[in-house]
Length: 277
Image 1: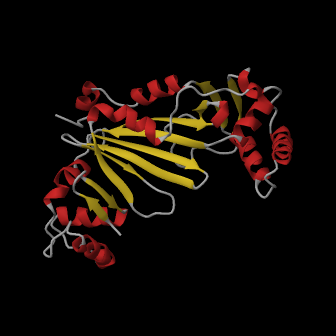
Image 2: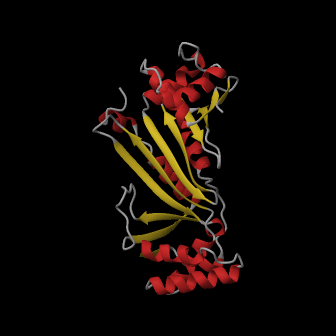
Image 3: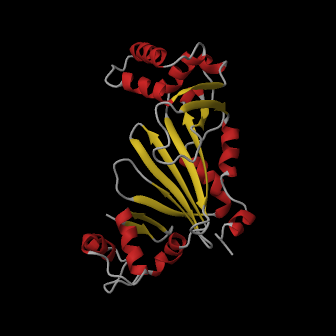
């Protein structure tokens, strides 16, 4: 069920509600499959009986309809993949967060000068991580995506006892790759300690001149942050297979912060791409 908080200008909406807004902005009647969603929006007062949009939606819908920069964070953790993001408009910036098991995402206005902080929050970037000794001497690991897939496949259905998991993962990786020590054990430790993997992507520009930047990171808890530099982002569907190179490079929280900031275009890039006047 959608909802809104007028005191903070925030909304909880599903994609189907956004689809209703898109039709109404185009002066179209939403199709039959969206009539229930339209009724929900009318019930809470965001849409009037004749399809008129509440003034509370003005900044939000303007940013969605004419974004300057779109930011997406794809985060995969214990509950599976979640998509968060930020919509940067000319006059307003809205951040949205998904929640496991819920259809609606929360859209909240934020100040433009907090944009990098907001990007870091979405991926739980933290300072002062402590690196465990098992991986302390390893700064880079190179293998194949197929070898990583073999580890995950071997771990499915194994008991949660740490010794069993580690032994199974080491055996699978040894059989599927030519990694030597200490990199072999280090990759096993990273895999077993994964809190989440995430990818942050920014896009801007007019149709036909769109620019995209992206980074991918493994958040390995006590083993710190690791940049996945290969396969190189942005990745297109079907581009990566079992034989593709997997290369992980250790990174500090400060370095990841800088890379997040570098994803954002400067004013000259926006003008060149036709994203802003």
